[in-house]
Amino acid sequence: MTKKVLRYGWLVLVLLFIYIPILVLAVYSFTNATTVGGGTGGFSFKNYANLFKNDEMRSMIFGTVALAIICAAIATVLATLGAIGSFYSKRVTKSLINTLNQVPVVNADIVTGFSICILLIVILRVDKNTYIPLGLGHIVLTAPFAYLSILPKLKQMDNSLYEAALDLGATPAQALFKVVLPQLIPGILSGFMLAVTLSLDDYFVTTYTKPSTFDTISTYVVNATRGSQTETKTALWALSTLIFLLVVAFVVVMNVLSSRKRRERV
Image (tube, rainbow, N blue to C red; front, side, top):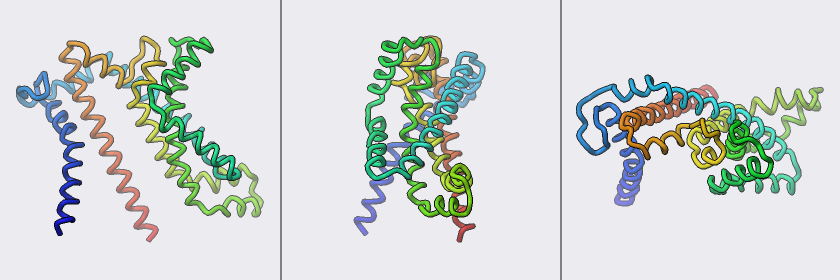
């Protein structure tokens, strides 16, 4: 009994440590406060109004989301092809691909960003004012994680399905699109959402590769917190709260849909 209480007590403490700062920020986003920890100044939607009235912030949010979706889509396609190729390769090739994929995952983001900057901008002379270095940087950052989301679904799939489709007269392309890919849809969606999240959250790769006139949420937040614009800082509280609520809503919806699918199978 004591071990059970200690185990659940430790779990509660960890969850409180993770979520209390977010909840405090969310509470302050609905007030007139200018600093977290000071007086609240009463309930208000001022921060949310400032967030949507600010043209610079709206442009920054739209640019960040567009970048994340485009790069995540390309990264997911590459990760899907890589996972399928790795799965149907010989043992040595499969081991080599999996090992190479692990390097960007465990590598520090600052090393990835700096390396891409040197290769594309310094050596290949790609104009930094274009979005090519930024886009390639986010694809390199997110593709390995999407790969890791898709590969387990391939391992769960019956290996004989592809060969059976070929034996029944399907071409390799038909077997791929009609048999293999439908089995991978949950993993592909998970990989895509993970790639979007990583792209939205990235700071170091973006800092080294972005055009000087472009900001993502992460770089904008860092620059804003260094300044003295109180209205901008408090509007970012509202933005953080909205992002958190959207993530919670997405997780809840995905869990509900997964539960329904499991009940239907039973």
